[in-house]
Image (tube, rainbow, N blue to C red; front, side, top):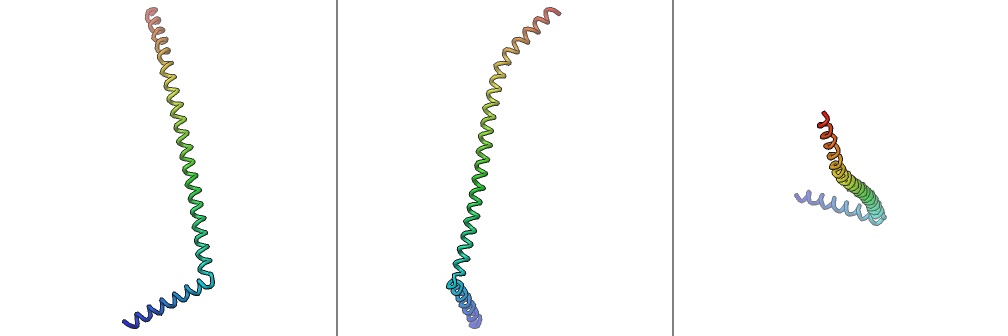
Length: 100
């Protein structure tokens, strides 16, 4: 059991020495800077893509609102025209019925 603890201690000390050596040489710092810069690039790319998706969604929403306004205006105009057309057709049918 004591031997097991010794090897854990020795391994920990070796790992700490290796990290200290990398830190003193600046390699650890350079690696951390590189990783952070890479994460920032990924963050920028994700942010840009998210904005693109939001812009596309806003465009689709605006197009749908436009189409709804057009459809409502057309339906209103057709309703107004239908009354006149119905009256005209009814009159023609009634006239044709008396002639037949």
